[in-house]
Length: 509
Image (cartoon, rainbow, N blue to C red; front, side, top):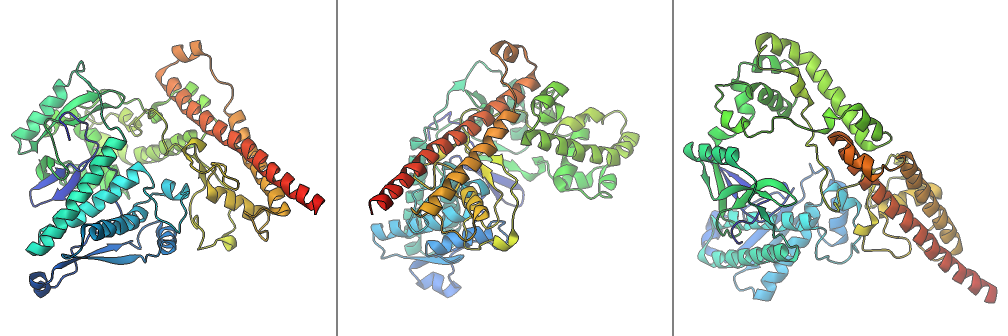
């Protein structure tokens, strides 16, 4: 990697007094792959010249049954052993890596990726998504690096060749997805640089600097070239804000009496600690914005604009949750800390921005009546929440697909006529297919109507920050809904065309 490239992730590896962050190219949160060292006995380590990797789908995975079903369709079990010997040819090692990738791709699928899956489950796929591919490659990379700690020389050759192949695939993915970014040098980062300096003075080692990236905002970039696996940032555990700090604080005896997550405790502790002039973490808190403009601080005009949207429901539910926490905790906390616990800080929850560009995670959740007796464990969407997104993300616009999510269409087909054989070019199936597409069109057409009229350019320009955010969100919804209704129109024409062919054949025949 060239210097001054943005880092979108770091890998954590804990030791007794430090946590290392290893640069692996951008990836999402840790995958659900269960990491294990090669299954070799102590005697076998000295004599054997093969490496056996165990890839396992944890039963604790909330999507276990869906992923299990997909693994089985591709010929895998939920626990697979991949063996590579030192005599393996390069092509054989490449084939083993490809097999590991097929498994880890499925293990690393999230709910959105699984719901909108379009590949032929009986054949391999190159990748499911950019996020999934990076997570899968990094999962295997961690497995290989763990194995390098305890192996023979012959095994080391295999592992190093595997590692080089994985690193090459990660770098190729970076190039193909054009991860180059423009650094904005005119933004001041004095406070952030003081934070880095404070960290170094307290035992942190860093090969990063803070900068503003065009289109992304503030973030960390490399000060020098980094390779896959290089340590980018190493932070002593004493500098990490964790629940251990809360347990040592003078407010823990109040918090422990209430049933709340460690994340909520940390949030409340941070709200108080920010106003402690003698806090060890004062330099950190000084880098935070003075004002958080988030969904919870939306005014009446913005909330009215969000009427009939899922975002409004989410904001109101979050406000209610915070209000309940506030009513339970603030009286006690304010009594003991009246000067450093202002109530208005409870409005800080959401990040308060709309991502730029097309985002595959911009989805519209749907509430459909579910008949549990009709659940099919062999179905791709056995226990998934139904949703829709922009049809421009789809690669399949053929009949019975139309760029729309298959689980949603299958659910509506089953509801319409459970006994009918669908996805076949027969008159009855096609007539029902038209009804399904009309139903989907009406659902999203009505949603779009409920969004109300769009604002003109002048009203947009003069709107307050929260109204502008609400407008941006509704623009995304309109774009998604428009793509769905358009796909329904095209799909109806497709089905009617096939239906007319069948009718013509019956007339001639």
